[in-house]
Length: 176
Ligand code: 5GP
Image (tube, rainbow, N blue to C red; front, side, top):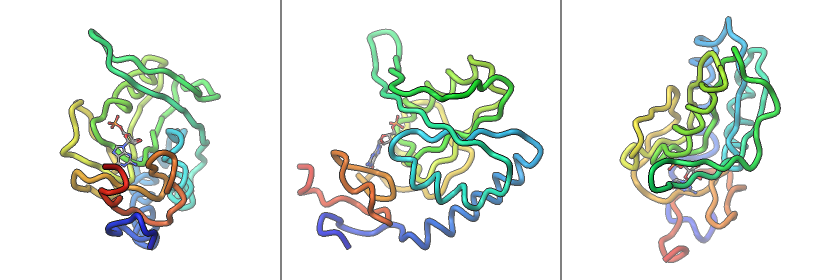
């Protein structure tokens, strides 16, 4: 275990098993649909890779990089990298590492609906329900976690720890 990790929450075996479970639900819901898996950079990459191995449907991948901030009257997101394809009439599954306040994904979801997507749903590896301030839920959730700062399996702190093969809680002394 990495010296900065206080506790491992989910091992790579547990995450892989969960991805298999989620992929079955996804295949059941999307077997007759054309679906684009859209990963939110950078944290979703390991989860998207693990999940998609088990989704035996004709899916395509795309990636998006956004940063979101709150203005006085509205929410704005800055698109640092947009998807490459036209989403009109397509079924979109947004793939995220962790859903916290819901700010980023609620804005991204609205944006794809505005662009004419047939449907937009979320699959998230982790869900911090306690942190939610926007009315948004993921259709597919790997694990519900308490309000702790987690790292690993794509999740970073100052760009570090994304490569850890497990999800763990970061020691407080590393960020306080
Ligand atoms: P929100 O749902 O608040 O818009 O933002 C979700 C994003 O916040 C995630 O993609 C992730 O970048 C970041 N985030 C929220 N909670 C955590 C956490 O516990 N650990 C890490 N590493 N990032 C987090």
